[in-house]
Image (cartoon, rainbow, N blue to C red; front, side, top):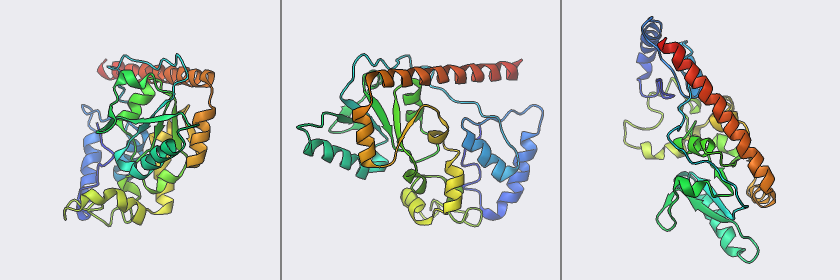
Amino acid sequence: MVSTAIMTWVPAEDRPQRSREFAELAGRPNVLLTVSIALSSEYAYYNTGVRFPVVRSLPVQTEVRYRGRRLSHKVFVAPHPQHKMTACMLESFAESNARWFKLQFHYRALADDGFVSDEDLVEMRAGVVLPYGDMSNLQMLLYWIGLPLFAPRDVWRWTARGSAFYTPNFENPDPFGWQDGSHELDFDIGRLQADPAKAVYWTAWFEIVRMPHIRYFNSFGHLLQLLMSISHDELLATSFSMRAQNEQWLSAVSAFWARAWS
């Protein structure tokens, strides 16, 4: 399976030769290379001229599903570490307006909040996804169990992690600062060096944009309004649509591997 970061850490001067070698490998009759998300397929084509089939990696081992038996006051927020300011805003607002604002925000694993299990997730009202990269296993898990999801519409495009739209790309052999040990700053690089045209193009391939049945909010206030006003029936209908989409993906993946091994 090919990664999105296929050429990220290859020195710039070696990339043309490595791209030709990779394309030759992919063309061999006994070799099957796949990707799990559309962005990886597009990025591999961008780097090598070869486009690979997208075969989703689904968390089929997870048996729990969104229950929605009542309109819960609990809302799951993911991920937390990369969006501390947003999490702080949500918590501060909830605490300051506790007399009338009844929603409670929970995170996957936080020292003062305990660990949210899969069984806990299915009892939540909804989930808020704050994307920072092309895809996360947690995001796929939330979708697989059918938890209705909310995500920011556009602002994340300028802070997302993705080497393809950091400037420069091919001219910079070390966009994340791995060689000088400064790679812990990679989230800040996006804010400082993201090329607008590249960011718009490449983030259009992110799963948070391509996955159907996700609701999008334009601001902090808009998110709160959506979370408080959505009805129980709307949540159930959304979850049903998500699970139907999961079944389509699972059928497609099963059919692909059946053909590949036949």
